[in-house]
Image (cartoon, rainbow, N blue to C red):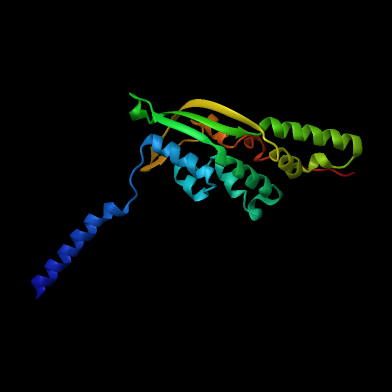
Length: 200
């Protein structure tokens, strides 16, 4: 009986060991990491982007800010931008001969509202100066107004780098800075901005 129990235990251990790797998600190639990240942004899938970006990435602030409790008055602006993100178009291909470095030739076509935000801010400031309406200090208001328009479409190409950090495939924020700025569609400069009024 003891021999049978030992044999049964050994078989179970072997089965569990064999099943272990099958339960893990398949490792993505470098170009698949880039495409998977962009697809998650398109779908507004915050959990989907987290495995591939580091803690200092601006996408964290953009995505978490869609929650009213986190983003406050800016939450509707972040949500409005993410609705535009479904228009992202990305092509990514590993650079032959640079596979060891995780180099991926990437072209991204993305909506960009940087100039629209600037124009909306200028118009709000002009109105504020002329009428004293306080429009300039309503940053969520003039940014939301800008997002109601078409904005611009920007196409750029980069050689991105996908790295391995503690066994995970991650795109370093600083190394791929311009790419992540483009993914924010002109919002990056405003992620840490706030309006303060002084009264005397």
